[in-house]
Length: 358
Image 1: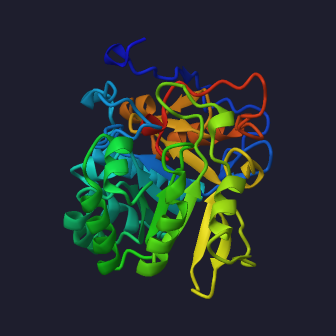
Image 2: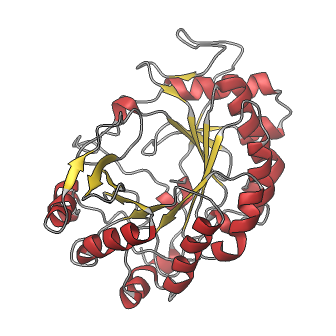
């Protein structure tokens, strides 16, 4: 199907049972616990499905059909759901994502409301950094703790080819602005594509070492809009580490990893680390502590889930906080033990990453 005719395939929300009739194993009170004993304390909130870049592994050059405004959560609705997560469900980390969250006009106010909650969650932002040079001071004033910036190459022409936009100087300026505003540690997320930007692995590392940023390489995942991902074409964690160790001495970081997705290595004698998030080849699903809220108010208990649970309808239908919290708990129970990418029956989610949130 030509991309100009692409229609956003929305995952059909899974029907939610009546929260007053709790199935066996439903916690009823307490945190977001699944049937495999994992507790979600990290909430990823997508504020928009729109983006001002067109990264080739994420969406087609002409973009996608965006969510109608009426389907998106309002600022107040986002804040209420984050508050319920923190006050009722034990959420301790909140990360705002997109699409591109800097396109959300109310972002500073949403951040300020999140950081005012008690107990105060750690609040971070994943962004492409376009516009960050202007917004970093306001976000810092709102209480934002830190920034993750997506950057896949330092070559301007290659950046333009990958993103279909000539905005590399804006991204680099945004990184510096985040550092100057104290939004540290500033982390850089990079995806390497075979035959396109593999050679950027070492230059990206050396750039981050020079500027004091923490680099994280992320294996490309089957979350592209055109469903063209194939494992055989993926640049794996082993490929990345082979390139890095050819130029630098990497020593495994002995610090406890916990539920963090990145395996980390100390680089030379710099005191800085480089990480690899091997979502495909070194799955860390057994320690997953994440739950996701989409821009249109759907709960996803896994990045690769093919079912969603609708909180927006309950929110707009007059449900109180306790009922919404119970619906969220019920949605968490059905979380699968792993993403299943290696299973022959694996099916890629209908929504691409830009519509789910990272």
